[in-house]
Image (cartoon, rainbow, N blue to C red; front, side, top):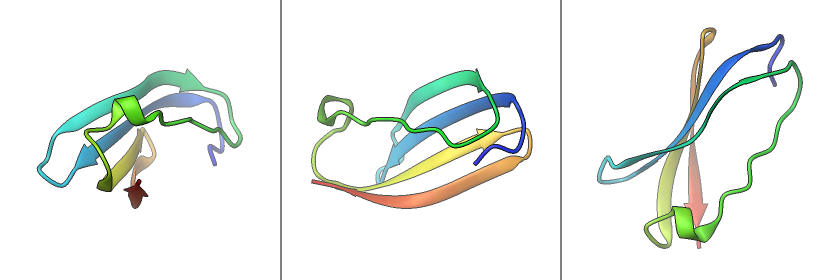
Length: 65
């Protein structure tokens, strides 16, 4: 959740280190949702997504089937 309006960047990284930027925008405070389409991915597997803001970077694991 964003506590205030700020620039955000959302990236997905596969386990070989390839990065795809899904979002690079300024977002309002609150909760946001991003739909990931399978055409954006290299196939099923484990990925890391990271949200980069001026407040810091959050990373989480995601399994895509």
